Length: 186
Image 1 (cartoon, rainbow, N blue to C red):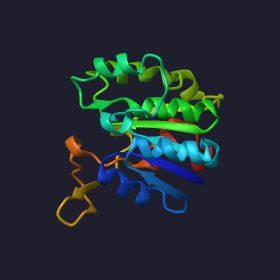
Image 2: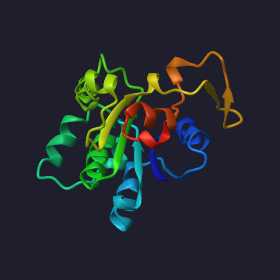
Image 3: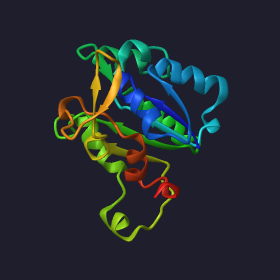
């Protein structure tokens, strides 16, 4: 499977290569790079897009065209992050690419994350295993995390029985399975 992973945290980029071994993985740490790749080759070149939700605002400027982009930017000036991953995920899903948004943002405290709960399959569907035609899903990183910590000195992942919940490391394969969009991984 050819998979695009977008995350601005070094530990999660390293985790993508670790947890998605056996797949062709392209990692990008900037939403701007993701849009350039999308423009150049199109999203259909990927079998999956896995993205963080909040990415730096400076990288997102100019990536989408909207008559409201200036207004949106003014409203977000108080924050240094924008839910650019959501916008990219919608673009990829709209062309038929199965897409997972995986974020460690507390969905109880962030209104965007709480709205993403609508992307989760209904409880009944999860229980019966019935597959639907959704192309986009939201997975909380706490439900798909590695038993690892990031060693910032050596720039590597280290196995750990006590993961750091404030700096958790995403298990991208587990996020794909949790999303229920990739039944071939079960």
